[in-house]
Structures are given as C-alpha cells and as structure tokens.
Length: 311
Image 1 (tube, rainbow, N blue to C red):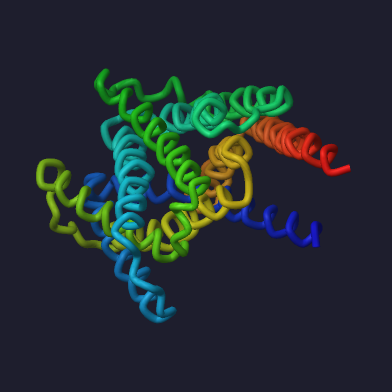
Image 2 (cartoon, helix red, strand yellow; image 1 turned 90 degrees about the vertical axis):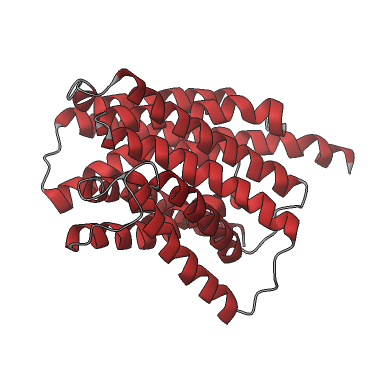
C-alpha cells in the first residue's frame, strides 16, 4: 500500500514538472501574437467553460460562498499575480532566463515562511537541497541572464511580484486545507479560479492590449497550449501535489522546471542544450532529491514522539 502511495506521488510530481514547465513555451508562443492580459483572458475563459461543463457532468454540488471566496483569492494570487508578473516580464523585454531565475526563488521563500505560517518543520537536509537546487537553476539559465538588457528598470520587478503571488497562494491554500476549509473538488476549485482570473485579466486587458483576440494560428495555438498543458496539467498537478506533500517538497519541484523547459524548447524550437545547462540539470535533480530526503526525515521526526507515547 505504501509503495502504491509513493508511486502515485512520484507520478503526480513528474506530471507537475512537465506540465508546469510548458507554460514558458506557451508564453513564447503567445506573447509574440498578443499582450499578456489578452492571451490570459481567452486562456482562462475557455478553461473555465470546460471545467464548469465537467463539474456539471460529474454532478458536483454547488460550492458554498466561502469556498468560492477562498478559491477566488487563490486564483488571483496564483494565476493573475503570478502570470501577469512572469509572462508580463517577458513581454516587456526581460529575458526568459532572468524571469525563470527569479521565479525559482519561490521554493526558498515558501520554505522559509512555511515554518512560521504553517508550522511545518524544514530540516537541514531540505535547506541544503533548496540551496543546491537554486545553484542548478542559476547554471541552467546563466547564459540567458546576461542577454537582452533592453527592458525598462521597472519591468524587473514583475517576476518578483509574480513569484511572491504564487508563494502567498501556496501558503493560503495549505492554511485553508489545515482548517478543513478547502475541501473543494479539484475540478470545481480550478473552475472558480479560472473564472475569477478571466474577470481580472479582462479588467487588465482594457488598459493593456485590449480584449479582442488578434486571431491567427499562433495565438489560438498558444491559447490551447495554455489551457491543456499549463492550466489543466500544471495547476491541476500543483494543487494535487500540495494535498500529498509538504510545501517545501512541492516547491522544490519548481527547480526542475527551467531544465525541463530547456528540453521543451529543444524539441519544439530546436534550441541547443549546452554542457553548462546539462550540469545544472544534474544539480537540480540532486537538490530535489535532498529536499525529498529531508521531507521524509521531517515527517519521521514529527511522528516519532507520538508513536513513543502509545507504547
């Protein structure tokens, strides 16, 4: 039984890494055809319709007002703030490598706040793994960080804001789960989040790019890419993993997304993979393995005292 649980968690983690990293490919495809809000409005509008139809077919109960509020807040933080920051930074000239590197600070910030906010114990092995993973990410995107410095100074604040939004959403979701106030089915939760994001991005689009889709194959390909891989896959696996593991363990998986994005880019755009990137990929894997070992150690030390008392 334990083996089945571990295999299930491993599959969920692998699915998250592959699907979450696809978002950077969608950003490259989409921002060449439309502004970030325009692209995101249609992404989340289509995703919300499909998710609502799925919930109806599955005969889900109507969510309570509190559930709608909780999932709406999560949607604003994890989708609107995060994507407006990370994808918007690329649109305004920040290199993809720089944006990815800033986003990769998320695991360290999430782990440092998980203790005081959620009471999660972060072991020394986990801290070592998180630090090692950051080094690996820096190597993977190192060549790109120094390329394309034409962005305005304020644009570099966008990925920091996006990263902070995802951290806040992660901690808030886990806090609500611990209070048993976030037991909404995953499809319903994503439907509420996407519907909320549609409204917010529509408001942004009125001042940034407009609501009308530009049309063309590239735009709709990017929208469908985002809906299938990044929304259903990326966010779906992200919230699923948070129900199965600690914040530090799940956040550490983000270290594997820049190297995986590199593989996506090689397969789709034919971009070359350098030796430094391969070295960084290996270090990222090492960091995630250390963090996983630290998570298991923290779980063992947490349950050990209670086991001792029952003897």
